[in-house]
Length: 200
Image (cartoon, rainbow, N blue to C red):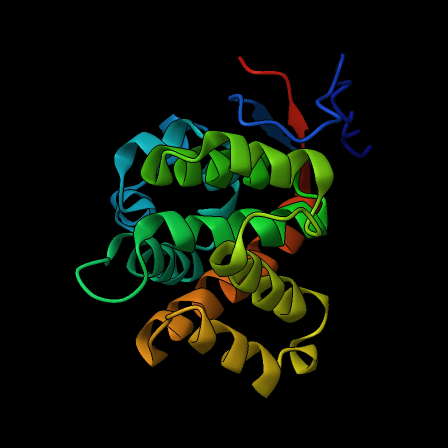
C-alpha cells in the first residue's frame, strides 16, 4: 500500500501582483520544526526561516540551501558599495513580474518601495508590467533585468551602455545583473514547487 499525497486546495489564491503580504504553500512536504537538526539550522542561516514552508522544503538539501541563502544575502544586503538597495530590489521585482511569480514580486516590490520611497512607481510596475515608464534610470534597470530574464543572451552591450548612460558604474551594473539573474532562477524554482496563498 502506498501513501497518497493530497494536494492542498487553496481558496481564493492571489491572482494579481500586489505589494501586500501574501503567503505560499509547498506542493511537497517541508520538514517540520521537530525534524530539523543543527545542520538544518546552520543552512537556514536565520532560524526564523524554519517557519517558512519554502525554506523548510529547501532545507531538505542543507548544503544547497546554505549556499543559496548566503548568495541571496550578499546580493541584496551587502550594499556598502555598488547599487543602492532599492534598485537591487527593483531588479528582482521586475524579474519576478516578468516571470509571473506573484509572491517574489510582492516581497521585492515592498522592499523597493521601502528603500526608494517611490511606492507609486513600484505599483505601476506591478500594475502595468515591465513596459511601465518609471523614469530613465529605472527604465534602464528594468530593461536590463528583463533581458536577462527572457534569455541571458538577450542582455547585450546596448543594455550595458544604457545603464552607463543613466549613471551606473560597472560595479552597479554588476549588481543589477546579479539581482536579476538570482531572481530569475529563484522564481523558476518557487513556481515549480508551490503556489501563492492568501496572507496567513
